Image 1 (cartoon, rainbow, N blue to C red):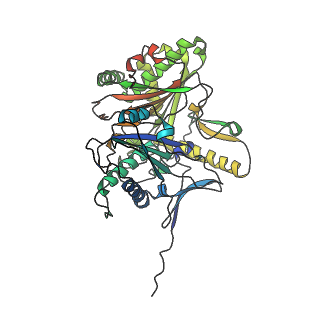
Image 2 (cartoon, rainbow, N blue to C red; image 1 turned 90 degrees about the vertical axis):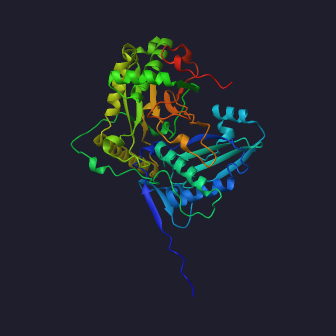
Image 3 (tube, rainbow, N blue to C red; image 1 turned 30 degrees about the vertical axis):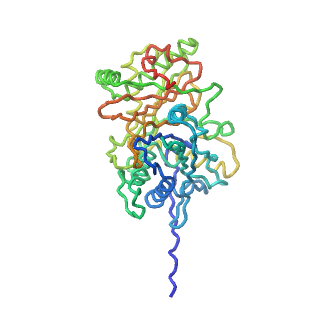
Length: 460
């Protein structure tokens, strides 16, 4: 008696409506773990690999799939019986823990992050890994660094960090129980964000100035640092400074993040005007990623939720003349633009343009590419990216939470990444908060009256 093999099933969904599609890049993080208990089986590589494969095959099937460009669409395609398993590489270094930690803090990508192919999604190249991992061990077994890289067209930051929290929880449960088949995950392993088409209102139109069309022959689908070398300065906002900012926010009737953004925007604006008074009539741009799930009634249990960008701008001289409360109100108004109607209008706008771009590519035409406005030259830019509520420091693989997590280096002028520290709780501000500021090398923030108070001392 013979039994027929199960029929292969194929599942696909379009990523064109996903705002992360704009970022055809890999995004990388370094997670540093110290072996405080001197465990022999510290981050066993076989358990790491097995747990990741189980996670993507059982709970996150799109991550074990492939991108596929066809006609005027791009899909993620995955199957019931074949998998694009995330590659995991390992290395062992004969250095001490302090040296390894310094490599992490200094963002030594070449040493600690897996090498990646081009992230561009084309008709010709569909074989693109969704996630890659590099585990770095010490000969002394003192610590491990996980270098994790993911394709940004597949996930946004919210989806990635809930994925990481689920992976670490699954791995922890698998230690010593290799025959487990069911796992208790801390976050529902949903993937796509909710359908928001019911929010569409054809009677309302929006300009969507957060996006810009540029000549395709001058545009590559990744961020470009420009002619100046962009370096990252790490600011640290102490508990006391957060309390002061919260009081200022209450006085101005804005949120804590909006007030912090105002400080960052005015601080960089005034510093650059001081260095070059001729830019006073130029434009000073504020832009941010907005996740309006609370306003839309989207559950916090959803991993990936609707996200878009909003922006506002004034001249450099106008921002310099405003006080912090006025600037915080500008930020507040920019974020408040993102109603449900605005969000679905943004998705419709993006989808129409992306289909045109795919048609141009398929027919060998060179026309326009859509990019976020903040990649274009401005006299001053402040792009606020807040990760302070992500479950970054809950990733426990069975040996404790990370001692430090290094965010990716973003080589474009004006990026301000708001980042938690190991003990930080967004609800209570019980620990320092970090801000990773990307600016041209010649700008010295120690001379900024607003920002110098937050300068963090080097590890050295």
